[in-house]
Image (cartoon, rainbow, N blue to C red; front, top):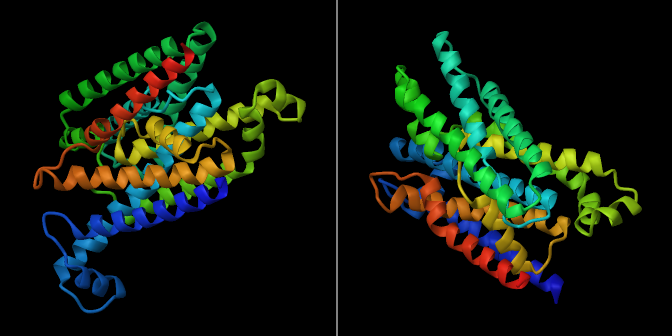
Length: 336
């Protein structure tokens, strides 16, 4: 019965993602008929403008939504595994906001010297910000035993980082910094194939490393004492969980800005749907679930108020905050 549930879930989520990618390519300020899309993808002669829209704008945006949405959900799952609590995530703990702050600071530094910021420098600066914020949250976790208090502290840290970033973006003189406003709110607009290559390498590397620690993660999930008894190196595992979660969150923030609540809500929904928390199932399921949610939310952000585009973070908040609220209420009821 459980295996049947797994198979059905992966079939349905794969079909849903394929459908969402297709819709994301077809819909927009200029709709492209299905026959025309197939012709363009096959490389047949087609309208130059439509081909440019699909290959240089919509297709890279859909691919980036797939990769970054999956990365964000995995980051949330890793953090939830580390803290042993389903109400934590990169956005809630302020990790995404910390990465956003350091990217904005690095961009100002580069532009003040008349240089463009490279893609690798952007990812590195985001990783530094995510790591520093995560280290601060970990220090707080030593002093604060209540998980709810720790989450509130993480939210406050995120607000402080976001406020500083807003000051930077608002009062910057350079027009390139001022134009970062949409990115600072969360947006997949403007992502190109060069950026997607880097995103693919980073996400693939993180997935491979996650697969290599699946067994220790499953043991850790059953309790630290049990994990030690079966030979798991707890310190190494915790370092890997934090490193991978920070790198994935940094990758998302560097290229798309902070995207809210995907990292906390998607693992919960997947866990509830599959009725399982084993790492070898949750890792691919969370990735595909995050990809589907982000593709859908980006479609809404682009199309509902067209030609005006809203922040994808605003859309994810509207759809996913109710999920988080319900999750917290159910968790509280179980405790009582």
